[in-house]
Image (cartoon, rainbow over the protein chains, first blue to last red):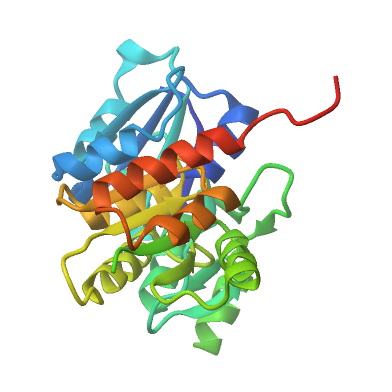
Length: 165
Length: 129
């Protein structure tokens, strides 16, 4: 499955994804890789129902999503991949999912997190996980919506943020 | 009292509540909630906190701006399948004025139905060709 966007977004499936990015990128399928939501039928149904009918949707555990992304039977399907946090994206990468670039689309404020960008709040664990993505050879940037400003998240920026925590 | 939460992107909800109160005076039980800068779980927690403030079992109506976004998902997940709670998408001013007008004389289900109907009626072509 070619991944046309791999996005970290703690709002999961919402307008920026289903309207913003999907209009621009025209994915065939949205895969949300999240163990808690995948295990909860009610939440899965709510998020699945937010996806426009022309786009397929899979809400799966991280391990299942990694396997699906490696399935060569669906090579022609263009996928928009979503995780709610950096940790899940890291797991997918280390399970071999073919991800080259990661879009940090939204990590909102919660207790203990500090602002790196107006829509990206991080703690030490987030930064460590982002650095691991760079170590794995991935390109990282932060961008909320198509046409919005894209901020390159390079090692220098992440280390500077780590020092400022 | 049947309470209402106007839950929207940005400040749409706060401004709608402000305008309702400009027209009808202060309204207890009518609250705005923005999705601004909140993760899905935090938004769900905000809705649950508002639900928990109920002082009776009259019920609630949550009015969101658009179906399929973070507000809708958080409202549906936070409410669960509970009696006397209705979530309606497509909030407009007419719906809120209707809510304030009818909330003391109707039960929750009837009020939700009337508010929904009012919102639909309010969307109409009023001029031009």
